[in-house]
Image (tube, rainbow, N blue to C red; front, side, top):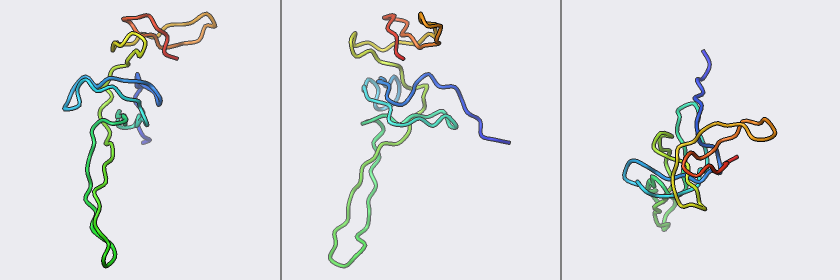
Length: 110
């Protein structure tokens, strides 16, 4: 059996707002999507710290911080113009192309 790919409402480069969890209310950009596990990587959200031991004599240790993925259901598309998060609707534009539209503002995302 192959990998299961879930359809996600967000894409790389989208501006989203976190609606659940410890980072609730944070607005950030989607850096990467993982359709197989239905998760997204959002800039500045779900920061994890990793303590690294010194490798050589006399070298000091480090603390690295990086983003960890969060579930796509915990993010909502965010309108930077209207400053509001909204659900999305799939509609067709004038060229008969399927596009994503914010329900609250009517703004076309794609």
